[in-house]
Amino acid sequence: MFTNIQKKFTQLLWETDLKKASKIQAFAIQALRIFYAASRDLSGGLPSLRAMSLVYTTLLSIVPLLAVSFSVLKGFGAHNELEPMLSGLLEPLGEKGLQVSQQIISFVDNMKVGVLGSLGLLLLIFTVLSLVKKIESAFNYTWRITTTRNIFQRFSNYLSVILIGPLLLFTAAGINASFNSSTIMDKIAAIEPFGTIILLLGETVPYILTIVTFTLIYILIPNTKVRLKSALYGAVIATILWKIIGTLFTAFIVNSTNYTAIYSTFAILIIFMIWIYISWLIVLTGSSISYYHQNPDHISDQSQIIRLSCRLREKLALTVMQLIAVSFHNNEQEWTLKTLAKTTNISENALMIVISALLSSRLLVTSGDKNQYFLPGQSIENISIKMILNAARSAEETPTLRPDNVDSPESVTQTISTMENALIESVNNKSLKDLI
Image (cartoon, rainbow, N blue to C red; front, side, top):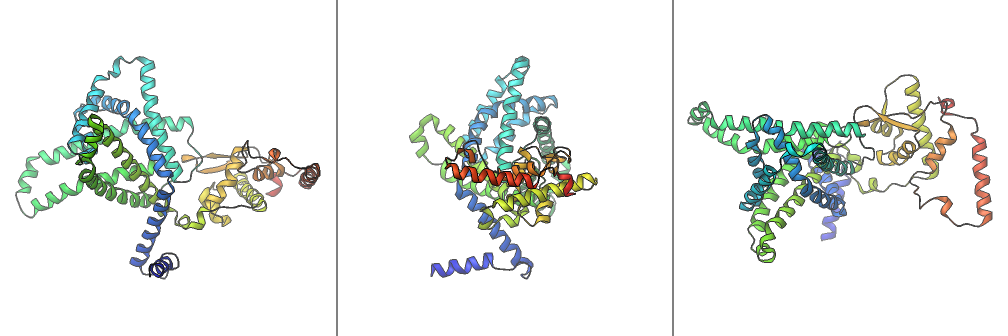
């Protein structure tokens, strides 16, 4: 019976034509597919390992990060908002969350940024930037992105987040305080049904602010263009998970006496670390959901298995270089990974195997916002067909996994050498310019 149910569910999930289904049915099935793909990633274990790594980095960087934020907020006379903000983030820890937030704030108060000196301040900023860099790496892995921002883009983007973030938090806190303390609002709240409406708004505003925060994170951090709809989709799911798991965490972990009995005075620290881990896991899950919402063709299990033959790699490399060179030569629209995948009818993951090799060989370079456009890395007259083929054939090779590392008989070596010479001779003196 279980086998029959599983078979019917599989048929419904993968064999239903969403174009022929009703809007509600198509939405539900697509949501199930995205949930399946995100669950598959979680079961693989790598998001969990990423979350564990971020726990370690967060513990090292939280005090320097809050110290920088404290300095920014102090410039606006709003440094007193830091503790309520931190207490709100640690709300699932219950009373222990208040203790942890007070302890962290005391560390921040004791850190005198003004007397650190130039070297100390640089180390402080470096620690904060390293946290944001690790967060970006985790998001890029979720989005299957191998290209990273250059050092100048990283510094400007990260510094913007660090400096503008506290200002946005202060603005939100100020609006919230004005909303709660306004005498006009008190008079309006005394009149029904406006009182009920204001009460409902007070309950929903924290959820809305959390969704907005997650949406901005999912749009800004990955080194790619994330659609607002996809980021919002992942943010809504992440917010729901955050609230549900936070409630369960408070009920079953924080109020449990087992941790106190086992770890004694270290119980607060252990619970704090567990909550940080769960929080990062929720954030990365939301990012995964945004990725699959924007790239539904990557949901199926078949999309995870990529095998490219030598012939396919060579044809893809020549096709990609020809398309990019033609656009560059004619001053036309630049190519992105998505447009290349659509034109060649090959998945983005498969294309990136070849494109990564072309980038490593400096036959291609990236440009534009978030390095999403591809351009020839050299003059098209200087890029030979031999260089392109060599890059394609060496894709995914490593220093310990190369043809030269294979011990083979002399006859095999001579045969391969003859084939190589024949190939070189056939494309000798031909360049990328000849393809356009």
